[in-house]
Length: 437
Figure (cartoon, rainbow, N blue to C red):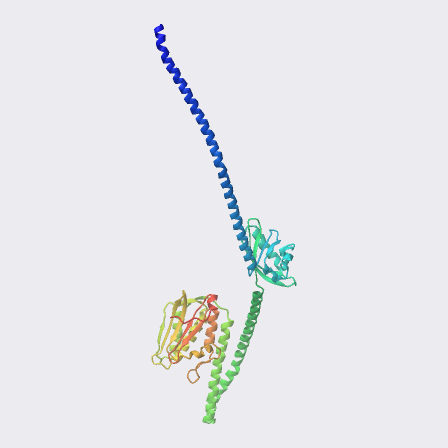
């Protein structure tokens, strides 16, 4: 047994030595770990200081940039606010001015006086207040913007017309711009009164012309009847000169009767109520040519009428237009052996322009301004007959159809008439167009 105990004691010593070594290693490792934690914590604290400083600096710089941007925006707003040629203002939701620009000086109130107003709508004309209040109530209920016109009281008690555009922001503040339209309103009123006066004068003149022309018919019939009776029953008692003078009276009475009929036709064009319907212009033109050929069957005229020409209009009045234009073309080509008349249309910007062309006598374009005047004739009676009322009638009918008529010609080389129907207002107010190509 003693031999065994002696043999085991070296192993235990080794084991104990190993445990001691392991404990020392563990203690060393633990100490190093704690030191590492201490070092890491110290470094983390050291790192947090510049990071917080950098974050703070970034926040400061961002705030400064934002303030600078807001300042620049305010400066831009102030510049536009001060330089605007229109009136600009800001008001509270309950209607108090908080800002006004210098253009409000036109009202005569100082800006301080405007800012002290009980309510901005106190300046609105009493007759306009209800409509103004209703518009701003709509703005409060969610309308993105409103546009109104009302009268604003000046310091001297007069009123000026202002045209407003207003909107609200999320806080309820109302931003408004106004333009002084007083002069435009006055001009419009003057033009409206002038138009009414002109229309009244035109109606009076038309009524007068109609009455005079109608009343002339009876004495003209008497002159013609008695002249015809003299020619039939007493012509043998007259010498050559007397018969010549009597024929002059008969011809003049016939011309006067035709003139009266033409004047009556001209007044009817503007007095009668129009009926708009589908009108076959090609068919109306062919009917007019048929009547012309029936009166002069011996004439040989080459006539070309484009098929399918149709438009909206008063069928009776458009027939008068084509009767007059084709009648003129027929008359002014009577000295041409190769007489030719063409009626068709071209399309300009999607809208038809009707074209009446002949190769007849034509006219001097220097006289074109007289073309559509009443009793204005570009040829003498010895050349071609007529009363000078036909083209005036045509123009009035075209105007009643919201169209235009114009012409181009050359002496001895024919004439071309152009007309349109139902054109937009901006086209009608423009300068006379160039002829279609």
